[in-house]
Length: 227
Image (cartoon, rainbow, N blue to C red; front, side, top):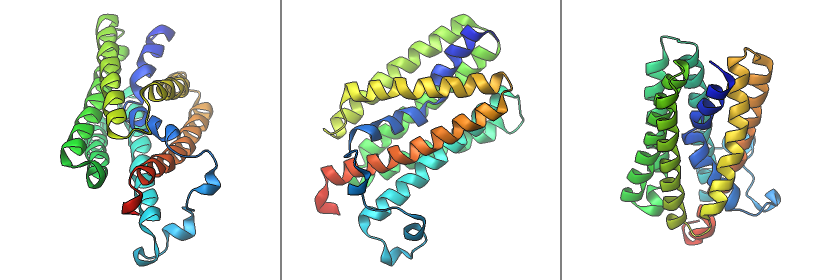
């Protein structure tokens, strides 16, 4: 696969990772000291000792950790033609349902179903794009990229309508930031530069934890009466 095809491939590798994660940057104060502590000791505490706010932070961290882990597992399995790829894809798609369900208590079942459906669409487009990139099918690659961009626009509009703290342009800007990082990760893996590949995933993982906390902060800001 040439570098141009790789760049196109990496545009969609994140899919759910990007879409859900980017909103986190926009919703909370940048002073993390203002956020409730979600430390290891807090997470290990019994449920009765954790506040509703801390529980939200903890649950969101679990969902988005799963998301980036299973996204990476699928990318590696697919690009390396590993037999577990279909099962990994199933687990990744299940994660999209779980993320959709997580917003139901705040935005309702219809919104949760819509978010889950949009995230699943992102994953399915990624599968098509990976297949096209692996075979150097530039026509299918271009088509998949166009569908991904339309889906991303729909996602941005949905998130902005759900929470006024999440601005459409901010989402778009953060998408580009994530795409750049994931492009580097994908290229490193394809070039068998595994040390760099792993370093980049560490960066992605740290980033998703921060974004997860800020997603939670946005919900708390919008619905303080629930906390």
